[in-house]
Image (cartoon, rainbow, N blue to C red):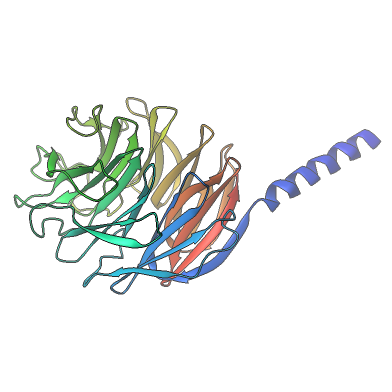
Amino acid sequence: MKLTVLIFYSFLISAICEQSKDSIGEIIAKGQMPNVIRDKSGTLHIVYGTGDSIMYLTSSDGAKKFSNPVLISKIRGLAASHTRGPQIAVNQNELVLTACNDLGDIFSFVMSQSGNWLATGRVNDVDTVAKENLMSLSSEGSNTYAVWLDLRDGQNKIFGARSSDGGRTWSKNKMIYTSPGKTVCECCKPSVAVDGSKLYIMFRNSIDGNRDMYLIRSDDYGNSFGAAQKLGMGSWALNGCPMDGGGIVVNNGIPQTVWNRKSVIYAAEPGKEEKEIGKGRNCTIESVNGKNIYAWVENGEIVVLKPGGVKLNLGKGLQPALKAVDSNTVICIWENEKQIHRALVGI
């Protein structure tokens, strides 16, 4: 009997300690569409939009406290709603940021060694072609890559550009994918993940009435791309756009994807059957020490699915983003009523 009681209390203490790793719900700023990255020193960098202003704040203590927001720049007609917003990445030395205006131009900024943000020009080499304002950014080492939906020929295609100097200059824009259905899905944000010389781009396609997720890969820093590969075995026949692009990370060299089909959240690796992990939309993914953690919106609430299947409700909101704080913790940030929230989640 005493042994049974001891085991029970040991289990209870363990559960309490596990729960104490989670810190739910704190407003850190006013704004919309937050995006987060972590640099090599462990500092977290968050960007977001408010009106025409691109704002920035940091945390160097594991997301316990954040700096006061700093204005990076003002862009007339800044896109910062409905999955559209500033994107941030970190290369080997500096931070790179891209932001789009409602005309369809993508502008880039870098943080110099002195800590000042510098405008470095425009990413798109033809005027106002990113009219959907849907873009993503990723970086590793000296390789930074931006992807977006491009309308320069009248139909949405996947275009991209590379910077090999930390976002100061951008390559000639490259047409990465043209759908045989004439257009990719018009309002779903593409995703990009850089892994050394490899590059993975995920997007929602539009072929024969189906709005399915596809993955395309480059092995040479984005100079050339292979064939687009459909993700998952099922299809979504839909006469419209779900405005839901999913998320991608690379885990030990293998791309891990998460996306919504018919309001069901699926996780999938290329060439493998998708696995249902929940119900909702606006999903994202992070990988820590080989373990995947997911977040999405379910009935207006932000939920996180930990490794091992533990599900955590963080409160009302939309558009969650995840980033590892350390080997045991991730930060989840999201928007609710034009305020930026954060929570720490133990893995």
